[in-house]
Image (cartoon, rainbow, N blue to C red; front, side):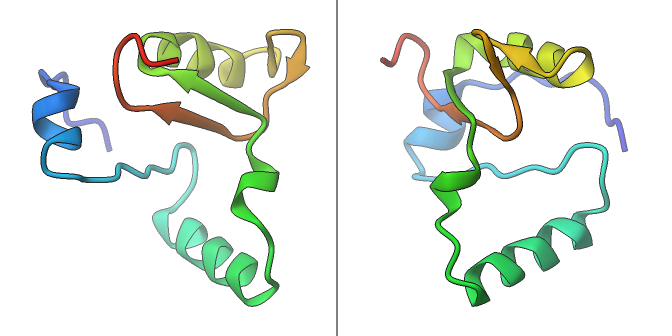
Amino acid sequence: MDVGTIKVNPHRHFLRPNLRLEGVRGSNFNHFVRAVAVMESAGIDFASVISHVLPLERVQEGFGALDSSYMLDGKTAFKIAVRGAFGAS
């Protein structure tokens, strides 16, 4: 459900309170919960399913890849993790 545009300060809203943001796009949230449970019970390393780790300033580029060719930086984009600070390397 789209609730519109909001202003977010990554440091104040996520880093300072030590929060972790997880999301599901194009799927029911229950699918995500079930998938995590299956992976945990099977002993699957979550890092093994992440194809890319992007800094926050490239998140739009990541969504663009998932909306079109599924290619990013010359590799197939499957699951993308986002580092939470602008300019983080």
